[in-house]
Image (cartoon, rainbow, N blue to C red; front, side, top):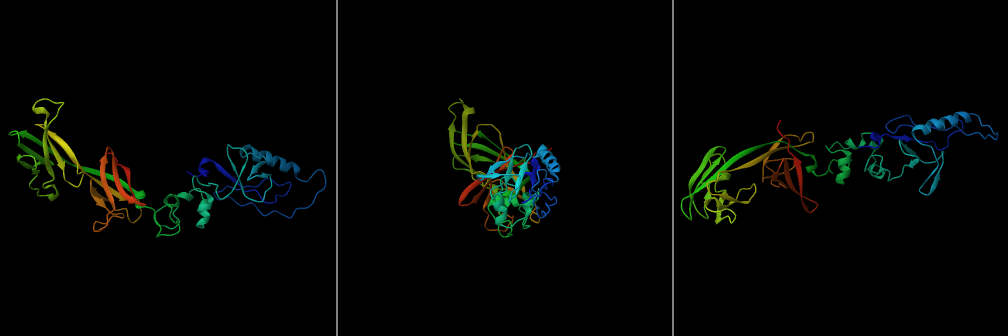
Length: 330
């Protein structure tokens, strides 16, 4: 949020204000500038012309902005100075416009000056896109990139959004054949893809017409007994999901139908011209901007956590993760 939206008013005080004239100031977002002062004329009389007008102007100015002497960088600041000052509503005293002054929150003046940007003079300056590359001035500032160079871009991950998702349901179950073998059943999207006898080392399903990646996806690692659950109900097979989604392990208990879900999220880049939605299954990698034929795919839809999609990516020689809110269906 810019300082203007928090009721900051800029008072550009002239370098040599003429006696008897009101204290001039302009609004930072585009008011008229203070006119050049006329040549001063010496007046040695006790009562200066316009003194009453000046007094009333000071009182009026003080109602909103405050008007008092103070120190700035160790120098006493009086009413008439040779550098720009700012008055802030609700605060006493004046502020000098130094390179470290944050005209817009978190963005010091020196950053704008470094790139020769005049956007800081506008209330919406941080939201403008100086080089029309799809990233705002604030995003360029946060990303440490050049806001005047289209080739200098922050990470596209800052523009990624989740627009939707879908789930493919699967269910598995086993019943005991003997101490070493079990009859396994596997359904995917309500279609049975496997029913057969398996033991430790076995893999299923054996075939899949629509999704070859399902073939042999689940592997039986061991058979065990849960110490906290007596009898057959505590028997389980430890399975490994060899699919690209999670590569995780889980226990499948005796005669207990267990349901799982494979998630696919739809993403888009909030950048004009690059905002075509694309879908990525959980566990898959992708490029930004998205290109299905791109060989280098540094981003990964690592997992779905609650109502968030966790994306893993490489940046500045570090492996980072960012969570993106998944919009809920109404």
